[in-house]
Image (cartoon, rainbow over all chains, first blue to last red; front, side, top):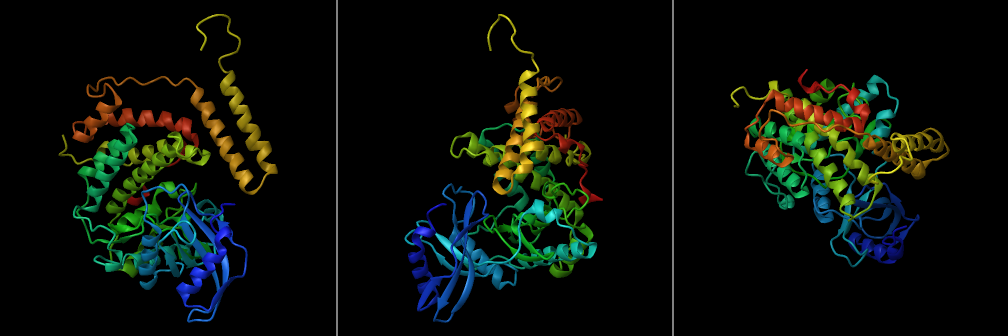
Length: 348
Length: 120
């Protein structure tokens, strides 16, 4: 077991006591490591907060960088700020409680949030048996929550670490993806083909909103066929809100249920209707298609980066190595979505 | 590889060995496992199966009729510069290359429907 939590529980409880204005804080259960992923480490623990304005029993998650943290995502402090802004906007997220930006307590920066019930695992959520009504209700939950996230608009002082893009988000993404491919030093003609299509067919910029940028079933806590929490805000940024719609509808996040476009769970029509009703924003299918191409490119690049962590020797790991092998099918998908007929006729 | 001498194994043996190992893992070992060990065994079976397909001799495609594609880097450059925009022959060449790659990495993905349902 990684040492960070258990070896420092006294310091941790003292920190919570200070942050919550309590007389004292005790630990009611052992701390357990939770599924976190390769980038973050999550610990679950139950605390008794005695005295002060926040007294009570708390099931919490302590979230910190994994020892092998990568640099692409937000810091824990920034993620805490995102969670707080989303919470106040009425998004169903775990309530953010306290943050600690320095290393003195647990050896790494961390924050504490309330633990929400459910599972967030795409392949399991997809396999759960549901009636059509249950599937529809879940898809409507996804759409309503996403619309609520997109009510958060720039400027927002608490999110001043997010750059407000001057260029259209689509073109900024094309540029960023090319830089990422160049940094990896791999020639991927398929991804390049799709990226060039994306460059010359980029939609005019619409309204900017806070985009989650990883809104898929793997990051959505589900219990009893309802959404209980939107997790993992580490990629959130100002962008084109339709990019989030396309992300959860992309082929690559359906876990074998290609017949159910929204995350392998339900129907586009239900999702679109609920999203349009909640957001007042119309969904243009061509724009979803555009961002669907970009979704496959983006996931392919992330997969290449994960494989590179293994291949470079920085972190020898079979799961990272296998992730590299999803790249061909993602590129294949992106290329088939950008067949010659889909290119502007004027292009030479 | 040895430069000559007596051939001591059949050419299909390395692939066959890995395929057989992957099948035993997937069909027999995994059933007795649960949790993390099961997940890891499935990952290993997948890795071994990919390696088996990688050993197969896939003929390299020629980049015929596309002058800019002498190597992957100049192809990428030409795509970025827009000199190959929307060209059907380039598209076909890329698709056939990717189809061969997917046949190694995840053959099941070839059977999938790939037309984007966003536009229906």
